[in-house]
Amino acid sequence: MFRSLAFSLVLAPTLINAQYSMVKEYAGSTFFDEWDFYNNFDNLTNGDVNYLSAKDAQAKNLAFINGAGNAIMKVDNSSQLKFPQKRDSIRIASKAKFTIGSLWIADMTHVPFGCSVWPAWWSSAPTWPDGGEIDTFEGVNQVTMNQMGIHSSPGCIHSNTSVQSSTLINSTDCSIFANSNEGCIITNPTTKSYGAPFAAAGGGIFVTEFAVKGISIWFFTRSSIPDILQGNASSIDTTSLGMPVANWPADGCNPPDFFEPQSLIFDITLCGDYAGNSNSFFQTCSGVCYQDWVLGSPSNYDNAYFEVRYVRVYGESGELTVISSDDSSSLTAGAFKSFSIMTGALALTVLLLWV
Image (cartoon, rainbow, N blue to C red; front, side):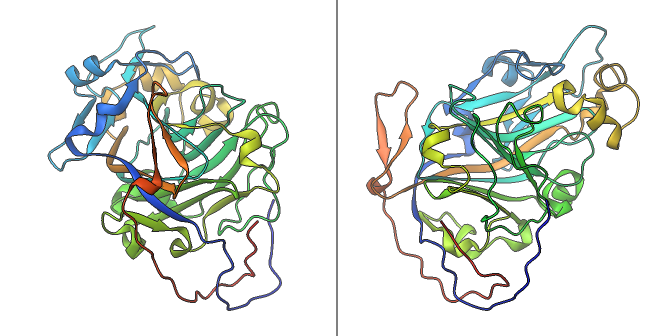
């Protein structure tokens, strides 16, 4: 669905002020310390991979911290396989879960891409689909633009009151029972949001807001990162980020009704229900997904890796934000030092309305 706007105004934004303070950071030598490695074959999306344990991933050099201090998560690109073997890969989920009223930021310099490759940076509740899923970054094969989306139980839609910069709205029904669980998908219009152009541009930053007023996603290429995200900010005011590229406002999908606390997830699978689906695969690739690519040259996967500088989670002041893996402890944003970010008037081409 495409929408046009018949007017242009310059005004100060009317977005509800949302102030978040840092509550957790995954970075540097301890990046992997608080994640669970799936340690099983892909029985979730029918991909042709074995997700390794933390011990095996380290031993096989598929999950490690590189010389720049960044976290690497990659697909095996050195083993020649034979039928019916699956290729080793990585899927990790944060031990902590994050509640409504949180903001998570991921700074990446490289994302996986290539024929048969299906990477994602996303979140999910333990009771999926009842607890919802938020896809901040996802793509398959050789597509050129990132796709963002949410999946939920029936009743959640992408509302026409959304305030977002992307006009590429693929689908509006978020129910897992609609359109073969496509979800309500929005495509980022810049080719620098995925694949080789993402890496060539130095990567970028993905910001996801999980709030009572709705769910929003921002993406910034390396050269367009706003000042507030340039350093190690202890506090973030979302009005300083400008308009999100994707927005699912509460009037169409009320987060407290459809979402539970979310675990953050990185994974890379191969082929499977999405990348291996003929409707997806033949759009950008040729051959047979498993036989020609997974069983083909290991060098097919030289670009199938995440390189992540950090993941930071912020919470609204006074709100429960972090739920530990054993539910025995929690942090509130108010326990961390914060400071106010003042923003001035912003020139916009639309009349902003935020529910």
